[in-house]
Length: 419
Image (tube, rainbow, N blue to C red):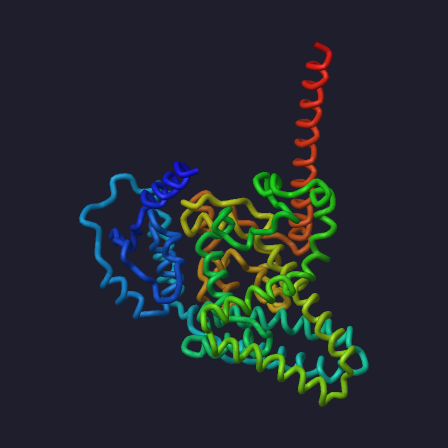
């Protein structure tokens, strides 16, 4: 046991503590990121595209980078990564920035936000006479609050991004902006990388690939294609405790206050509308459950059935291999899904306003062709088939494998018994 502990300590000590940005190797051994630990996911790798994508809005980040010491000499064995990707990504980001595609879209975003707030108010008014129907409406609205805060979390609205995210995530939805950024930025940094993308942690209930299938029991593998969507109704309930614990443990008192204000505001609104306690409970439970189904379904269409990506993948590789577009040219599909239908483009340029993503589809398809990467653009129906069909195929494949193992073991035992 002691020996195993030493091995783990040695492995940790041997892990690289440098990253390459703009051609320079930075010594990160004493670096403390003011906003989180995402930089550690790029240790031993070229982190240029990640730096530009996460910090393209922040001159202060470049100033902090310049103050970070360089390695005395380039590392002897940097992790192998495809050549030309970083330079092509930098050029494309510069092209989009020069075209003004990173400029905020306050009018479009504002109209979207007002429509969602109006839906929330309407749900509260409807709650006394039809609490379940009102719950479905508020669940849809809360899901769209999730999409709206997503914009703020990626700083799409410039200086107003922080307040925007706190309003929709904290006050309207009762969540934590910081918890979301911590989790979601890791998803962008290591899209579909097992062990590093937290959104892939769906075991022991669901498996999307051969590795995860090993951690799922037989009964779930048999039914996962049919139970996945209904099970998403538990998504928000499951994370409710985690989110609140995170905010309290991190002493994020503004966010804790916004959560409390959220419940107080809804309680006052439902009481003023004349909703009974039972009706309010049905309203809230339905809203929570449907919010999870709505968010999880559209996220799953764009990611879960896509292939797994190695940790050393470049930004272009992870964006192309780990994401799927569906109905990418449709503005209606964009607003219905919170623009999760153009996930390739969003992962290529996460700080670009969602309404502009359709404009760079041609550039992204061209980059994919240039570097031999997949560019998956499909219909809504095909995306649903890919997601649910992927669950079914993965489950059946693992079940057949286990059956063959069991048969082989039985044959061996029978032979030993006969001998």
